[in-house]
Length: 287
Image: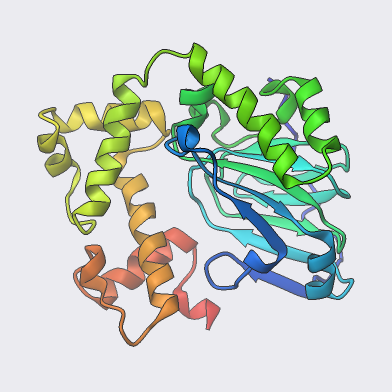
C-alpha cells in the first residue's frame, strides 16, 4: 500500500478568498450528486462530481478551500482537474493533477483547491468498502492512500476519461457489483454494527453502548470489539459523531425550533459540548 506522504510546509502564503465549511455552507450547487443503484445503497452513500463551470461562477477565479468534518466514511477521490492540497489532523499532503486518492475522513479535512477544480468522488458508508471490495477501512486510519492500490489502474483511467458523471458511475457500479457478487454475504461483524447504528438513530440517539448490546443479546465488550474491527473506533465515539453531525445540521436549519433532547442531549450545554468535540472548536467560532 503506497501512502501519500505529508509535506512540512503548512503555510503557503496563499490567501483563500473563498472558504466553505461542511454543514454550515451550501456546497451542493457546485456538485452533481447521484444515488447508487439499489444493490449498492447499503454500502455506498453517494456518488458526486464537481462542475468546474459552476465552481468558477461561485469562487470567481479565486483559489478556495472546503472544510469537511470527521465521518469515518471511506471516500474515493478521482482527480480530473488540477492539483490540490489536503490538510488533515495527520499532516498536509500535496495531491498532483494526475493523482487519485482514498481518504477515510477520520479527522477534520481541508481541501485547498484551484478555481478550475474538478473532482469525482464515491463516498462509502462505514464498513461499506470492506463489504464490496473486501478491504477493511481500519487500514487507512491516519493515512491518505493512492487509489491505484485499491482499484485497477485501467479502471481508474476509464473512469477519468469518461465523458460525464453517469458514465463514470456506470463503470464503477459494474465493477463494484461484480466484486460484491464474489464476496460472501455480509459478515456478522458488519451486520451487527450496521444494525446498531440504525437502532441508535431510530431510538432518537438515546441508547448507550450497553443498551445497544442488549438489543442484540451480546455483551457491551462484544459490540465495542465489532465497532473497532469494522469502523476503527469505539461505538461511543462513532455514535457521538453521528449524533453531533445530525443535531448540528438540524440546529443550522432552524435554530428557533431546535431541541437538543430530540437528539439525545440533556440540554443546550450538553449539545454545545458534543458539537465542540465533533468540530474541534466551539460553535460560536462559526457565527
